[in-house]
Image 1 (cartoon, one colour):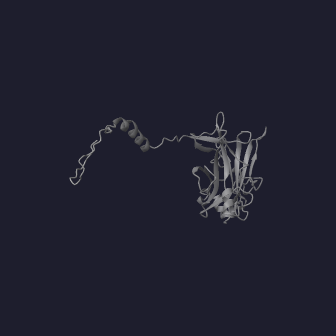
Image 2: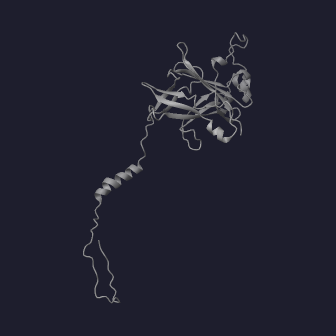
Image 3: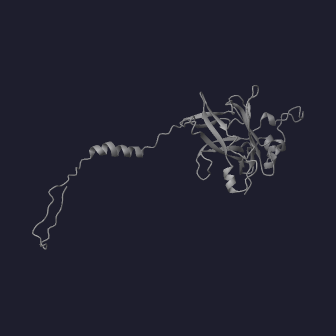
Length: 278
């Protein structure tokens, strides 16, 4: 290290004080650079490694028995719960027009029920289709047997069923899929997802939001508190499961779980109402 002194001949002093001890500052920092700086900068420049492998979760009842189906019933403003109430015609259904087959139910799952601070985790989409229950039987009408029911008798209902055992109904949405690299089995920190439900009408181009509440919210604050359905994701001995939390929506009787019996499998019914414009 060098110290620079400037001598001024205008100074009347006869002496200049010089320090005897100088602390040396080594200039070689190769080890610190190689062992600390380089490694730190490499870590900062490389993205975190995320395991994108997903697992499949099966719906179960309160006894951890597999559910046979999840039935989602949609009621629109004015009490309409059939496709005729939301603009569809008989021809749309009979000829399976795009306006019908491209309409769909969607569940959006978030990591929090706080709308101002939540991240979208996963979704599922279930398109409109005709099931055996929507077909007129010979006993009902011998002439029209084999055709779909009139649009005013066709309920806006989605039966989410196990695609591994049934090839009819709405297969999408029965299983949930989420990242494997999550601790699903912690008893002290349960893993929840919060679903918001919407129906996208290809006939009108309208997206409709729904709530599970029995009484429709009358303020924005009450709406934000009661718009979600809570799912509990857990890990069993051999598989992953999920349950729909019927106690989360405390003021609602629209989410009903029917547990399995010795002769009948359990199932879930979710009745949803369109959110009116506040």
